[in-house]
Amino acid sequence: QLSYVLVVRALSHYNNGFTLAKEAQSQEEDARTKFVESTKELRLAAGILQYVASNILPKWKAPPDDKPPEVMPEVLESLSKSCLCMAQRVTIVLALMKGESVNKSLIAKLCLGLEAQYQAVSNSMSQLPNGTRDKAVSATLFDEPAAMQVISKALAYKYLAIDAHSKIETSANSESLSGTAAVCIGHAYTLLKRCQLEKGAKQLQAVLNAELAHTGSLYSEYQNDNQKVYFGTQPAIDDIEIPSKQFLPTAIEFEMPKVEVVSFASRSGCTDGTDGTSESVGGSALTQGSLKAPAGVDPKVFSALPDDIQRELISQYEEDKTSTSF
Image (cartoon, rainbow, N blue to C red; front, side, top):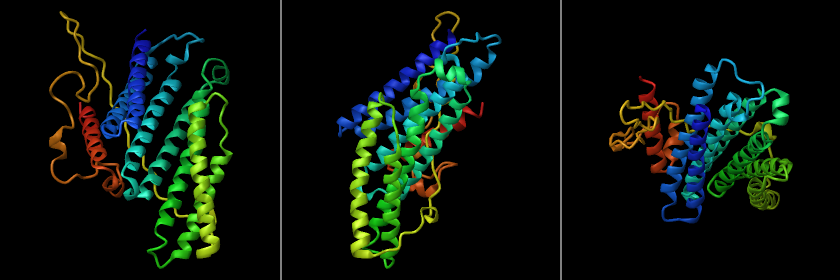
């Protein structure tokens, strides 16, 4: 029962995060604020799910053989990582809101980090016994991470192509850049065309269709430019220099609420300062003056992010550091 209650709470945070992200897409005025709030809700969900999987379920001494997916550690770990994947996707959208000024190599790094995290989701699910996989768990938990690995990798190559093509006119090495852009966009387009989705994945299919259309258009443009204008040699795809991947979101650590004996009132259990008290971790004092990349974040990636994402990462880092110091 305790596990069910906490999982429901985690899913409510996920739903809030998803709703905020959807609202942000249609409300330009408050879009950035809603996107930042969305990532926090998703990180809260991830923390609760990880807590149940790591701290509660292992104490269950004699679980039934036919236990539901909601109390399977592998499923909850996978869902926790999926929440962080969604937070990374929101972060990418936030970065892209900078428009043409955004560093395309940065977007490629974030997409490669997303690919690696979706691989981790798939690895968690692969630990389930075959019988459980076939009967108890929704196929979506297997299909979506596998598809998103391919889409994320394709997006990384697409933005590497855009980055190379955008530098052609100002570079003395225009032929090489044109060849690189052509081969990267071709690889991205090939990956997307090979991506197969289940019939019920309507939302993901819409994302895939939009990316296919845009990448296909760029493919025609870059190939035409290279063949008729720049005549650049196209390198082998394995010879393309790939930037280091970067994954930014981390789960907000969850703690079981402390119940007061008389009133039964309790804190929220979250160590991020969202328990209704006035004290919060990661406030303005953390971001006064020059913003510096927290430990584990590439300084170049950090400096290229919008200010609001930088502040959120600093706050996130301080929250994690505070929670692990106890």
